[in-house]
Length: 491
Image (cartoon, rainbow, N blue to C red; front, side, top):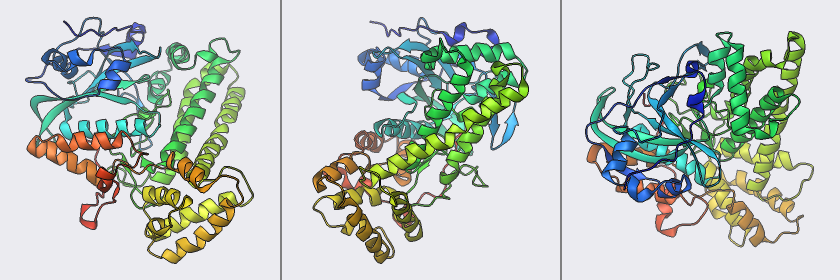
């Protein structure tokens, strides 16, 4: 049998200015190292066929399957605040779109599949390390319940790529609701191609926000919907200690999914100013800056949509500002609601926000591990003592003072300790992609062609909220000599 992709392509039916038609560059000896079988089934694909040599050739870009319409998408973007009018898919090729078993349209894209007209002197290839990092972190984010692109497969190419040194080449098959970004709108807006902006907006509404199809002011509604999704998305990032690392407008998805896992990382010790990305020298995309940057990116989207709001410039600007003004309220509501769940509060009382902020302040001052503090606090909500939570603080007395107030507050609610513990454990993971674990996996694969650590980590992270006693060590923060201080984009 032959691998069949039930492609139903819509983006490649848009005008030629939206993309460049380009085929993946064949590779020497593709070898499948990981297939996401549950995702393949969700996409209506046959995982057994994808795991054959023929499937590996398709997932590496050596063979283009029937029905595919390979394209590299055009977009622009603000990178660290500096506008670049033409970026585009420089090392990614969209094979096409499928309708999954839930009726959702999904992009299937090869990342690292060779140069395109947008490569800007790059080789269009990906090294094995960044491919494994994106597979691990994107699937971990999915398991955490955070909107994200997914990873269908990782393939080694049998060829080397050259960065600072020679590295094994690889291709990631990425799945997304779409790959349309704020930067996609900017590409046409900077060229004053209002008709293309309108065409793109109509496509986005049809694909992602069909409830707006018959709206009186669909483009106002579009901006409002994207604002809401981005506000809620970034709140979810903060609630698990995630730092994207490169929140450029070309990495800001219109669908509200997390996209482009380059120098991303999860915090160990809580620090609102935490930065890992080696290229973020000024801390623009630090952990606590992410809501502000998301709003900045959305403001750039609003600028692109202004011509669609009407001919009166001042009125259009005022309307856009009103819509953008909802970001802070939406973000704060999602973030505060999430924090309340993390500390086990079911009702609202005066002083709750201050109580939670006092915990965060104490965690920052005492270098408490973000993930383990909240998880062990859930343990303490039941019959267990608070020893594990207390142990996260350099000054345990700081925790004791806060815990006394917390217990007084939770005593005012009708839930039992067991009910509170179950609710807290459902939102406070015990397992996250710790940077040192991800790095160890990459080193084993790159240096020794050993993928057993990768498989093990992916397995653990698939159930982040469940105690897995046999893998308890995966919850541990790094020892001093294991700490990863910088992450890299991999291009």
